[in-house]
Image (cartoon, rainbow, N blue to C red):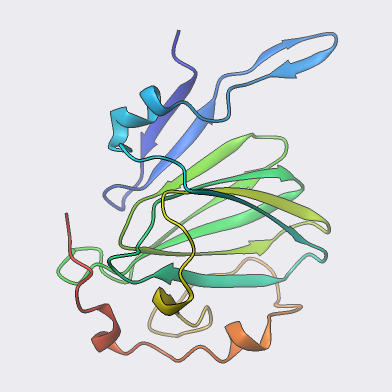
Length: 188
């Protein structure tokens, strides 16, 4: 039995992940990750870190974060409480979808995940108060490799569904697009 359905998105390498539930009167069970099954979409790495985030207020925007090579990372993002609009932005120079984005609602109810390969920035907007995400990362966090795009950059023209309520000063002050920052991030 396969525990996941992987659906390709318009951005090559990004997949939505539907987990198969086993439910009864007690509740449900679902597999959160399986190395063998994720290898079908090219995930042949170990999980280096698992991070958990909570966003207290709906309308908060976080992102768009990524790590520069050689520390770039694959992320598998799931919402375990509340709901978010989760977004991947293609930052691979030379890609036909360079600076295009894909967004999907991840929620406690739909139990979907988003698989984000190397070469993509990631961000989200909380659609409910007290929303929580779990991130599986293929690489360790490296502060020297950390970069971000400004989530309000008109070059990306992200269509956020809610009015912005909060954003960290750090995220708010990320620079607008400068194509030089993407050197070394290639299409695979």
